[in-house]
Image (tube, rainbow, N blue to C red; front, side, top):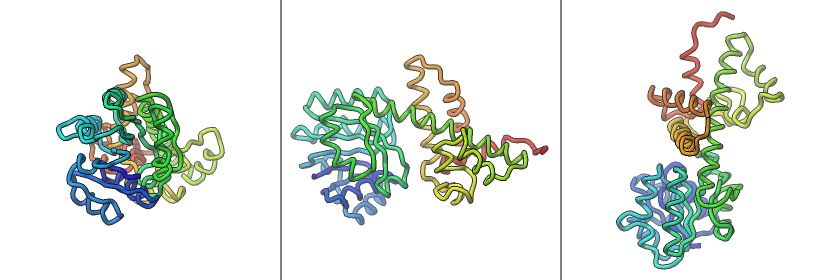
Length: 300
């Protein structure tokens, strides 16, 4: 397929490159010149604007920071929708609010386009290794049409429901992930203060009822789980600032639906404190540093 890819940052760049490796012709755009240069080195053909990238495209994929950026790219002056001369498959892989995702899908449908919201899980490592999981909202036919794209960029794609359902699933998933990581940070900090070695607590909990995906893949202490950012001084695979963004989206959705999410609210507050304290550029697992800093001298 001929694909336009808008947003070639830490996530979008590797995703676009994987589509090239899968045999697609990819024309890309990013406001940052270094991102454009990196993508070009991986086979993405650079375009001077989103509209230029979309010329002749059979599909458009966007991977952008927030809902306002996505809305601007699609509906702003010289936006994607105005540049598409025919019905085109649109896939927004950004993580944004549910309302904007639904509004954009409706707007695209007026012009005959099929649009999917398809936020991802897997972080930069998943983007680089084409092992992302896509949580998809939209029409079944559009989902089937996009399968070659999902297969080129990830290992799994799940249709969660109609427009906005992908964003809803992402908000719920990452709220749970953020809560889980704070629980791990608390448990392993407490365990160490009670005289339990981290490797011993891991050996017990990873085979017991306290086990979680976050524990097995992103344990916030070094030397135990190979894929943990704690082994690399919390170099981000999924930055704490991004976790805060997702937790905030989840809290907005909770407020809109009248849903009680007390732990989600606490998680948002803790990540907010961590980011405000300068930790936003670290991996989300680095929130253990906040728990450690809040803890008094051990008495065990």
